[in-house]
Amino acid sequence: MPEPRVSKSRYLQGLQCPKLLWHVYNARDLLPPVDEATQAIFDQGHEVGLLAQKLFPGGLCIEGNIDFDEVESRSRELLARHVPLFEPGFRHGYVIARADVLAPAGPDSWDLIEVKSATSVSDVYLDDLAVQRHCYEGAGVRIRSTSLMHLDNTYVKQGAVEPSHLFTRVDVTEAVSKRMKFIARRIVRMLRVIESAKSPEVEIGPQCSSPYPCPLIPVCWKKVRETKNSIFDLVRIGGKACRCTAKAF
Image (cartoon, rainbow, N blue to C red; front, top):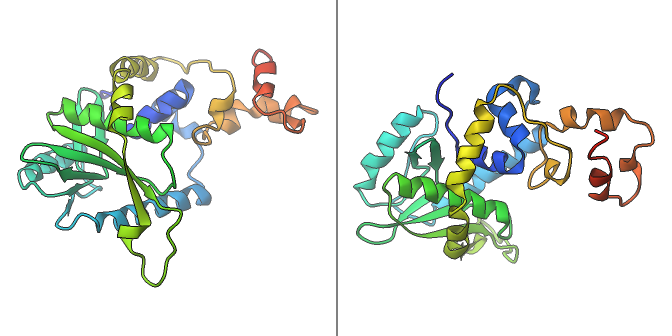
């Protein structure tokens, strides 16, 4: 088995549920294909990312459909040009990451920027940026600040979309820095999960739908859905049902 690479998306999956992380690496055939609704969200995110790139004139994009070794080589080559880079990729140990935007912030430093099609900052976005910064700094890229660009929900489109009004940019450097101190230990634990011979046992719970709906729900919730008059059928039961059934399922 080749050495596992923990990308930022895999890192977030590992934070959500170790069972999901194990299946992504070892039993992908049990994961359902991406449905139309989820694909539409991905497509929307891509379109929003392209609009954000217009705010960084002169930027260069690293192609996404090439081998990661080539992505990293190309990214390091373009760093010398000191222009905004879109989707540059770097590696630090077992971690790989590609930022939405890496913008020059001085003669030898950069601003790391993540673009989201959401309208506010959330914890999962901070974890996303934290693992990116961990990777980039470990790879020798000096980061001055980390920011999140999200949609401004007060913006009213009149004619063509104006990217300068569409986005709000929030500096989250301090919040991201606090999360970075946990990353190294978490990566070690995630690698142990990935390399385990069998999937870890994880009880169903709030993590099944937060921060994102888990693709393993059809597998983990099979017994619940087959049970007549399940406690989950009660109105407004919420997370209490998971605590009540933790040992039953």
